Amino acid sequence: MARQAPEASNEASDAPAAPAPPPGGVSTKSLVILGVVVAAVWAFAIYVDSLVLYIIVGVLTALLAAVLVWAFRTLKKQRRVVSLLQGSVESPEARRDALAKLSAGKDANSPTNLFARAQLLAAEDPAAAIKLIGPYDLKTFPPAMQDDVSLLKAQLYLNMGRTADARKSADSMNLDNPQRKEIKAFASVIVAEAWARTGKPKEAIALLDKLEVPKGKDSENIVLQGRIARVFARFAMTQRNQARTELVALADDDPNYLGKFVMPQFKVHPELQKLARQVLQEHPAARKQMKIQTR
Image 1: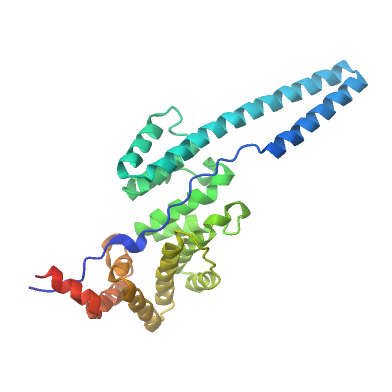
Image 2: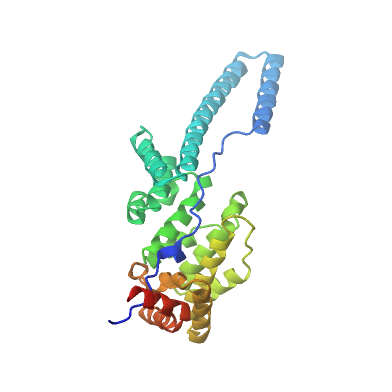
């Protein structure tokens, strides 16, 4: 019986999902400042004792109150969404339940809900996730969410082999966004892969060389994704020996990590796919898997 390459999982593409949108809202400090300003304005109006000024200050106060009511209602909805996302990690059933609740709500097509639903779908049906969120322009989403949306889109597009679309999403991200420092390392390796596969391999290597991975539960996955991106970059720079060395190192850790390069859904360049298959065929651990599969 002819031997086949070991069945490679898509574990190599698994990475920490883009985080849930930040709750945002109005901080206590901001409320105190607003209260002081409003009190000062009313004190001035009373001191001047002008009817016109009373009307102006009254209208402004009413508008401010309306904005605060809207902000608190939005915050309440966002907290509900975040709670559902946090609970969805417990099991596939919990994820499907959360998705059903978000899809059935009257705010199902609000930007926050769309992003949350796409995150939930991405775990089991990336194509459905990108179909849901892909058509929406980035400006549809609040500024605080836009980097998260771009990150999720880039990750999904890469795993579908749609590298040009991934590049567009990657280029729209601000990796130095001070409000999203916690996603910088993961975002950087996704951007690096998008660049490496679309004509910017040198920039990808430079980004990976200055990568700082924080300690945490996702650090190993981020490092793995960075190593995968480096293979793409070396290959794009026609550094075949370096790319092969990187592939061998990945196979030494786990032959399944080469799944990103040999599985058809990732639509990798045929020559790189061939190189990865050669590494698998020559690697002792992979050959052992082949023997088991062909018995």
